[in-house]
View 1 (cartoon, rainbow, N blue to C red):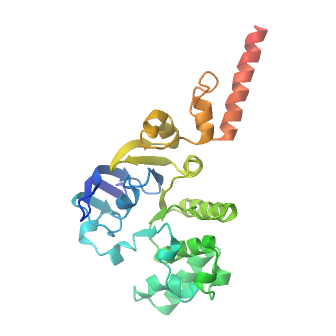
View 2 (view 1 turned 120 degrees about the vertical axis):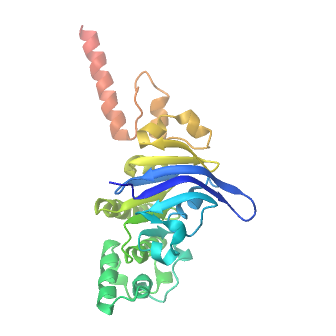
View 3 (view 1 turned 135 degrees about the vertical axis):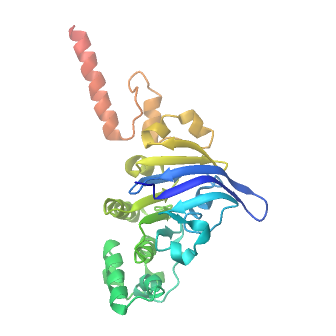
Amino acid sequence: MAPIVEVNDLHHRYPNGFHALRGISVAIERGEFLAIIGQNGSGKTTFVKHLNGLLRATSGTVYVNGLDVSKRKVSEMAQTVGYCFQNPDHQIFCETVYKEVSFGPQNLHLSQAEVDQRVEEALVAVSLLDLKDRIPRELSKGQRKRLAVASVLSMRPETLIIDEPTTGQDYRDGIEMLNLVQRLHESGHTVLIITHDMLLVARYAKRVIALRDGQILLEGTPREVFSSPDLLRSAFLAPPPIASLAQALPEFFPDTVLSVDEMVDQTLVVLRQHKEGMRS
């Protein structure tokens, strides 16, 4: 099966001359959960905006679900790739939650029954159905973030891009958002997240792309990427604290550790081996 996203030698230069992307080539498989990491200015948001046509390549090609993005309108790509901005207030503008989520489907000229069905499905998915008549600005930051996701879901895109899913949210809202993203992935969506949160990457992502100066620095599973701490530091990134602690004790933890549970398991193995060695 062909990848859902195919990017080849992608370059982007802004009108001010800044060369933001420098030869990005990547394939994203259908159903992946991909994290894109990198410091501010590394090209993360610039890259993903090429996947739905918000930005156009200076050179190179971008295909999504077999479509040449350069030849498609943003409105058309929105039915294939949904993009949630880092700040939900940058994309919320309607008078009620219902109107916000129905805006996209109504512009597809669907029947009212179809619009209502899509709105209900999207609001149920983000646990906001009971708030459909509320004014968006009265919602919490976490609820507004979920509303932004619902407005994208109502277009029924196969691929979801969520920029900084937990930024600006308290712990409870952040957990709710991550659980939502996980459910969407498990329901069949291809999910791309942009994040600075390495704990989030370690727990949820199946593959990671680390960018530096508009180029791919590292690519692989979280374990593979976090196994190169020196290279990550060159991009002002670092593995999760638990991984860094384990890497400082290689005699006890020869493999990269991604969670406290993994550290406990490996510690028990080391203790068991030490005990057996004393017996012999």
